[in-house]
Amino acid sequence: MTNLVKCGLIQCANPINDESVPVADILKAGLEAHIPFIEEAGEKGVQILCLQEIFHGPYFCPSQDVRWYEAAESVPGPMTDLMSGYAKKYNMVIVVPVYEKDMRGVYYNTAAVIDADGTYLGKYRKHHIPQCGPGFYEKFYFKPGDGGFPVFETKYAKVGVYICYDRHFPEGARALGLNGAEIVFNPSATVAGLSQYLWKLEQPAHAVANGYFIGAINRVGTEAPWNIGKFYGTSYFASPKGEFLAEGSEDNSELVIADLDLDQIDEVRNVWQFFRDRRPEAYDNLVEF
Image (tube, rainbow, N blue to C red):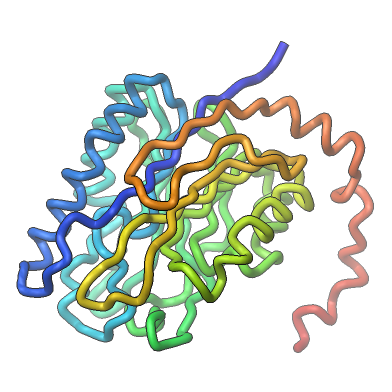
């Protein structure tokens, strides 16, 4: 008997690419673009759903403009309250990536996790913040995460979150596995070129090295006025064997669904005993450099 969990990813184009439009209106339009996909997920029986990085806004980090601080909100706050309603309506866990305002002048790139009964379980704050401009001035907007690598016990599975640039760092991916994650979601905003060749290498490798499932999300389209390149979608699920279970297109806003058999985690870990054979006492110097 299998232990299947139906999971979904939403990749979505930003609907407004006009800097003359107020930030609040841009966020409203972004949210409205996502609602049909959230409802589609619920109607199709998705049990765990993850949205893209800063899901209802553009990826504004190619600029260094204080106007985008207006996009930040408290977590928990208005967006988690709204998504709690959808979670309860569809008995669906939702991972909600937003721009978080912790206090005046302190902001994080955050993902909230809401259980299927609408309960806010907690949040993950992105740890690794790139500053590799032009195009990625994230340190202007985000403070590095300070909450460790939590794993959330949801109704259907133990869920961890890693956000975009985090995926280049195996240390946090391993920590999520050691903390008990069965499924790790990586909401991202990444454009063609630069790291595209890594998109289907690193995260399946994390899945194999740590014996869990990966859900990798990337938005689609080109966002003005920055025009740093095409967000190439291809959101996917990968298994603990490194197999691709479902994949989105490069161009379309869409819902990607896969059934994840959690029993496969035991199957893989019974063969590859990476957690048993680790030598943490030999790794002290990894944090000395």
